Image (cartoon, rainbow, N blue to C red; front, side, top):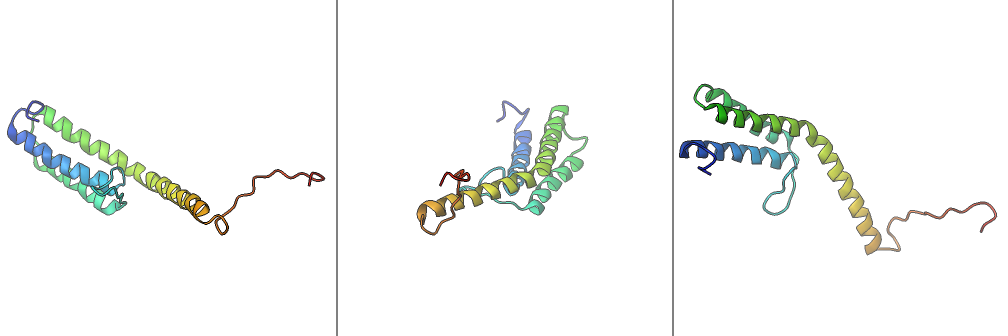
Length: 125
């Protein structure tokens, strides 16, 4: 990591940035936790982004141009993903509901939901 960053302190700073970035992405449902579970907690995601913005404000004037640009990029990308997260969550919920319906149909074919796809026209019965 020190190859990318100018010194060990910069590397450690961006370990902290990465920690908050990962937390925000986790709470927006973009990445699963270590058990494969996905979460959707926009308040926690916003808190992670806000902490990065606070860090940006508190370190203003103490970072190199490259460090400032990298921090700004991380924050901007998280803000963009924050705006998209509700749509991602709705899609994930819809996919899960559809998957449950299909699973129920195969697990209990007699009582599971059925969709009639036949195209019966008058006089064809």
